[in-house]
Figure (cartoon, rainbow, N blue to C red):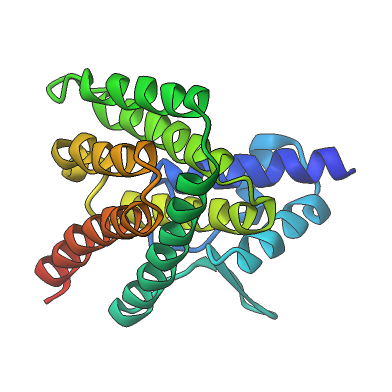
Length: 216
């Protein structure tokens, strides 16, 4: 049963990341059941987990909808997200090994080589960006902090899908990552933390500017 719940959770999460369900849209439990062959119980268990992680909102006797956060709620989320990533950057600068850094550089080089004109550029960037930050988190060697930040990354990716998409930041990310890498390589903890925070702040700034333009 636990495995079934996890599969359904990942299925619905994947649909959210694909933009299949937009902000405020209903989550069709019956449709998901018919398409996956899952009963209502594991679907609702997955939806309650998604609610705990900030993706959906369940209302008794009404149903489940994708969240529709306000501008201020998204802004507050990114302030928290950036502050935590700053801490992770500091810890990585304290604890990283040369092998850690080599892996981080290799991932960022792959990001630099993405062809922005290709139709799969955004998807490839998303995948490599997740790898980059997972490697950064591994270098921090703080499972408690990093497990919570991973959930924040999922929510951030969801917000990006729902608003401007991933390509909007693609031209900036390589240089921003490089600033983090060089600070870690020099074991400059405060600088690494600042650069990691600034990187998330940069993503938030372009996303929030997009929201202002599209929502007035």
